[in-house]
Image (cartoon, rainbow, N blue to C red; front, side, top):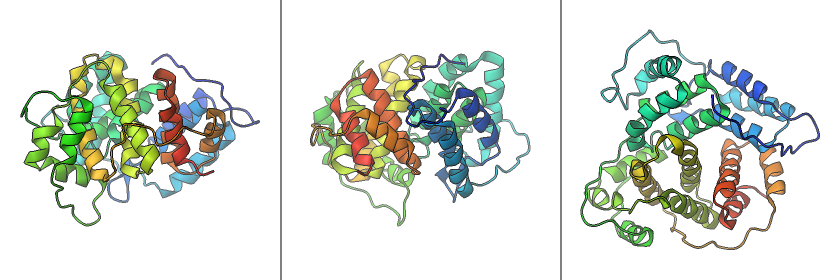
Length: 338
């Protein structure tokens, strides 16, 4: 579907995982539900693609898959249904119908055309199910797997989460935007709220709506947000901020299909809510230089059972290849125990 730029950075002495193996596992994973334990996203296909690209062995990819999938649930068969774009966004009960919709559209028009059609709509809800619709879609693109792309887009559309904003003042530079956000009164969160619930609490705040959409957007905005996430995660190790970094990488992967910088505003608004929901202090400077090389970090990440550590390392490594900066390696280092 898309050109592959996989490396041969194998971290094991056994045979490396292959794209054919990944596609086989993604095909098998179609039998598993997109969420489990209520509204937790199934990370299996995302981490599988990350492990492949990081150079994990075939044995490690298979073993990790078998271990992770024990906590997942089978996909529930649903009767055929038709969704209407825009009207049926944000309906988790319609995820199967959305998957059928995107699968049919990809078969008819191709993956690239489907992305060009869907992203201008879906980016307004980039924080859907705490960024996992966005992230799963990007991993599907990297995997070059049309079926998984339909699942990723469906996850995004079914849990679509737009955060309303209004234009109350001129655009702000990043530092000024962050200062304005930090001055906002914090809303009350329901006990045990997931990240999505905290994003929604901020979205209901009129003060948030007046500030969040004012970040000045240009060709460098995504890089700036990604580096903010990397530096803040490096300083805090905050779990919510981790999703801003992996979400930034997903936006970078999908950028060829949203070429206008303004289309990323939905992501920057969701990132603002995520940063505030995290409670972490935004970091515009790196806390300290990284101390471990990529080779060691990647090997350690491939040995981890935690999908979030694997995905963060993969995201940071890819972002470092696009926008070289010590912050990416330092963020990965923070996630991986010595």
